[in-house]
Image 1: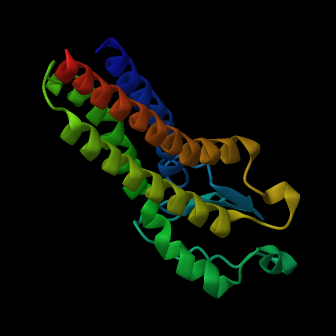
Image 2: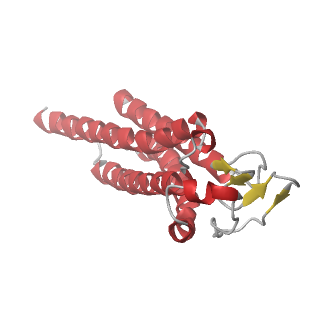
Length: 202
């Protein structure tokens, strides 16, 4: 029982780290003006909009979906993006996956804590563990998709304007920790089934 609780607490902790990373992504420009998923030619791109720092400081409205290719960067900088403006506009509509992944990681963080209180000693807990594992698989898929969207949309060929190492580390955390959580829940399933088997043979 103690091992099972520790596994759930560790799982919740990993999801908390992943949730923190996505929360930082959601707070980028224009919510926090100087924070962005990518900066190029005086434009800071965020999840819900952008801010321009060149000449005069101005920000777009907070929108769930916005056109990331609307701001035409001066000079040849438009050609230095990995993707064309049309492709960036299409992928920009998928930025909604970031708040979706944020919500899923928060639920995945809170659910193991709830399961600890619902756990019945001597009872069958396979359904609780299975439902939690399914949720974490969905969370993993959403985090991988959201991180892929961010990388495709924000990566720039100019090394100076590529997302900072700090942002890339957070993206790695967001996609890695849910994968670790699935392994942790596999262990919890083994603990629960082995405990039930021992009770049947005793």
